[in-house]
Each structure stands twice: as C-alpha cells, then as structure tokens.
Image (cartoon, rainbow over all chains, first blue to last red):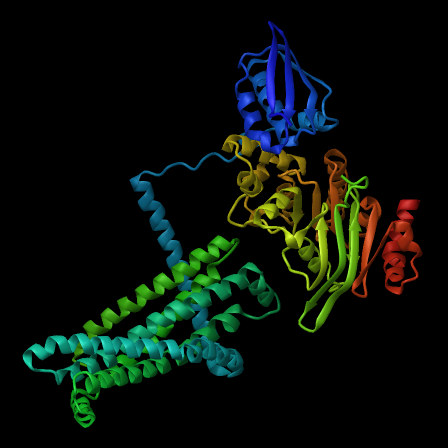
Length: 376
Length: 258
C-alpha cells in the first residue's frame, strides 16, 4: 500500500485535505511530519477526505485532529468537517479533544534550589534520617529487652534459619578468601623481608595481620555484601507485598519477627566465621612458609607461639560482634524503609551494602586507634 | 488465502504439568475473530497458566497454540516481536512498571515499536489514557499512587497502546467495586465496537460474563468446555451446573432477564 500522505488543496477560507495511503500505526512519524507541515494560520472550513485511507490507526487520526484543533484553538475560526470518516473514531476522538489536556493539569515543575536552599534541604533530610534511625534503634532495643525475658520472643527457629543462611552457607567463601589473602600477605611480606634476611618474621607478619585485622575485616566485608544486601532485599520485598502490614495487623511486631532474628543470627554467625577465616589464614600462611620459604613446620609453630601475644586473637574477635550489629542494623533498617516501588528496593539495597561497608571500615579504624592508645 | 479466516486463537491438545501435578491434559480452545470470549474455571484450574502458554511466556509440555494462524512456539525473535504488536495483555495485578509514571508506562511499547517524536508519543499516550477513562492528571502519577481500579485502567491503556487486534485480560474487574466494574464492562464493549478487537478474558465476575461475553470456555477436569452462555446453562456437567446455577449466578440472571 502507498505511504501515508496529506495534501492540502484550496485557498482563502475553503480548504480540503486529501488523505491517502496507509495510515496504520507505523505511519505515525510520517503523519506527524505532515501535520506539522500544515500552515499555522488555517482558517475557515477544512474538509478532511478520508475516503482513500484504509483502516487508519486511532493514533494517526488523533495526531491529525490534535494538530488541527491546536491551530483552531490558537487562531479560532477553523471549522473541521469530515468526508468518509472512519466510523465512530472521529466523533470519539473529537470528544476527547474537548477534555482538558494533561499538560494543563500537570503539577508545576519543582523550584530549583540555590546553594543555601540545598544546604537547608540536605540538613532537613539529615535530621529526618537521624530521627528515623534513632527510632529504629529504639524499637529494636525495646523488642530485644522483651526477648531477653522470654526465649519464645527470641524466635529460635527463625534465628537458626538465619544462622544457617548467613553463617554456614558462607563458610566456603569466607574460608577461601581468608586463605588466599593470607597467602598474598605472606608472599609479598617475604619478598620484602628476605632482602634483610629476616624471612622468619613473615610468620609474625601473617599471624598478627590475619588475627588482628584481616580475618575479621574480610569476613565482615563478605557478610556485608552477602547478607546485608539479602536482609535489605528480603525485608524490602515483604514491605512491598504488604507482608509487614499483615504481621502488624495480626498483632505481631515485624521488628520481633524480621529484624531481631537476623541481628541475633548475625551476632552468632559473624564471630564464628571470623574464627574460620583466622584458622584458614594461619593455614594459608603456614603452607606458604613451609613450601615457598622452606621454613620447617616445627619452627613455624614455635615462631607462631612467640609472635602471639595473649591479646592478638581477641583483638580481632572482639570486633566481630560490633561489625555484626552494624551490618545487621543497616541492612534491616534500609529494608524497612522500602515503600512503593521496585526502584526504591534496588536503591536501598545498594545503600545498605555501601553504608555497612563504610561503617565497618570506619569502626575498624577507630578500633585500631583505640587499641593502640590502650596498648591492647 | 483460505476462504475461512484462521481463528484468532486456536489451542489444540494442550498439556501443562508442574512436576507431578497435571494442570491441563488435552485442552482445546478456539476463539473466533471479533468475539469476546470469557475463560472460567475454579481456583487453581489453570486459567492464568493457560494465558501464559497462549502468550508464549510458558512452554507447553505438549500441544499447539496458534494466534491468527501462526504457531506461537515456532516463531523466531523477529516474528515474535511482530506478534507482540498485535497482541495486548493486561495482567492480574496490572504489572505496571513501578518506576515509571502512567504516561511513561503507556509510552513504553509505543517508543519501542514506533519511530515518532516524543511529543507525538506523549499525545498518543494521553489519547490512550483518556480512552480508558482515566482523568488527565493520572498521567503523571506512579503506579503506587493509583487505586486498584485506576491500575486496571492504566494497564488496559498500555495494552491498547499499539492498537492490537487481540486483547487478553486476566481478571480485569477483580477487586473493583461494582460501579467501577460495570464501567469497565461498558468501556470494554465500547472499545470492542470501536476498534474491532477480539477479546479473551479470564473472569469470575458473573455480571461481566453475562453482560459482555459472546461465548465462554470453562476449564473443568483439565479440559475446556466452550459454548454460548445458553449452552452453559444447559450443561449437565456438575461443576458447570453449580457455577451457572449457583445463588449468585441466579441473582445476576434474574436481574438481567427481569
């Protein structure tokens, strides 16, 4: 079939629009261009001749009528008639054209803020966030004190499920990363130390760095990525499905059912995983010392015992519950903030991971300074 | 061309299984061009599964599905794209994209398939929004801000955007108050007359069944029994009898006859 065309005939105040060809939906761009090409100051009577058009798409008819009505609105005195119009559609569409258009109803565009306004808006937002976070922590504290009084409120079933999901299922990845990172540390350390003939201090390096820092920090980073995001996403989807509202309506607290078990589970899982990472780290360091640096195993063992201060292991492990609380709080808090849309869910899940990583590393830095001060 | 045009939808010997659970076994269905066909069945009878199979969203375990004489399972990507233009669908819960407002939702298929300017697409989207009876200010709202009835209408506007020949509706009036549901029925009849649509509609709304549908197909015992409402009323099959002669159905019929 021929391409869509529109030819304007006539002069003065008598006009005739000859419409021809294929006015299907695919011709929308052609029709739009043809309508845009009509003179802006049409007036008088315009007859649209539809007889040579086959099965025109509503969208195309609409585009033409809309363009003509626009001209009539601006200049007045344009009467549109139809010859052989597609049944029904012109009348329907003309009626719709008389309704107020969406543009006139659209909300006014948001005012752009100046620098001072931006600072203000940011402060208000920050204050709101702080308030919400404080409220969140307060609620958890309330629920947790309640749970201290009865074991049932602690939801042992739910806690064990989360210990399995966040802890046991994470053992392989935590073990692997712990092993590999300590191999890297030992390897790079030995390259430097061998220049001074101090190969044996690789043992000190590996032991102290793994036990004090890497074991717990890497575990926390993995768990923040793995479980922090899962917490936010799980709770977020439940929010979107109104599941949290349903719980509340049935007289159950989502904090007690959803938030607290995850926190408790993480408090159990993260220290346990840290011990796994520590053990694998020492194993990795030992393996490298024995195979690559030719330090015999008994010597490695005795050196390891010398390098270990009584506090070395605890200086790492004591941080694990703190990191667990940070990751758990951020993940569940962001999850509970989800409302309305899937985009919100993605944004808050991302935020949960980024913020928990940031907080974990910040806390680790503070620990390092503090331990140094108190000589721990 | 054959003298007899292919039916809009033809399903032959359809079989669907979920593990050991058989949902459809030897299900046949035929929808003629230009009719409004209602699909009825008990909860869990596999109405939505049937819809998904017809649309090619789910691969059937056996049997064939033809839309407009084209076998759905044998189409390549490009043909599938062409077919998607001729078929409009609304899902049970609307399935509007939640990060886009209503106008952008309606524009989504338009922009994907047509090369026109944003302004023209905006106007066509507004046309569809107006056609389904949504107020103009709904265009800038996000799905989360809409009521249930408005979500159904917005979903219909999106389904109609590409001016399909075949429209599938999954429970379009469920969750609507009777006034909105009746308005939706009128809208459907109007669009059906204006656009010459073939409509396949899953519904439990007896008012809609009696007021709008030309024929109905009932899924019983993993197969489909189809016919006019008069046929259904005379069916000896126990489930169909219960369905069309139950107290609610009687009330609707009495109201329509009286």
